[in-house]
Every structure is written in C-alpha cells, then in structure tokens.
Image (cartoon, rainbow, N blue to C red; front, side):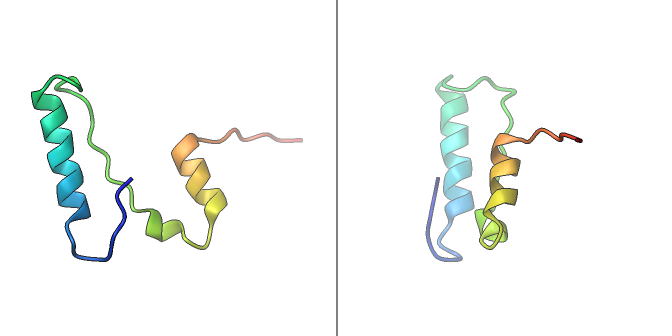
Amino acid sequence: MLCGPTGVGKSYTAELIYKCCVENEVLPPHAPFISFNCAQYANNPELLSSNLFGYIFTCF
C-alpha cells in the first residue's frame, strides 16, 4: 500500500515496482497490474472491504 499526498507519484512508483517484479520473475509476465484508489471509499469502509475481499450475496 502506497500512501502520500496527491501528485507525488504513487501510481508511477507502483507501476515501476510491478515492472521490476515481472522482469525479475517474481510475477509471471501475464500478471495483471491493478491500481486501486482507496480515497474513493473513505466514507464507506464496507464498500472498500467488499471490493478488496469480495462479498457473498445472501437472500433470506
């Protein structure tokens, strides 16, 4: 997880880390790179956790 103010290069740094991992075979070449902006969920932690970990819809 990368944290910091807007405009410091968090997404760029994450992409560089991803590319380094692929080049050093830590990740397979077809591994997806997914950028996830947690700030969109600041007022709704339940929605954030469901997006990160999934959810099961149950109907009673």
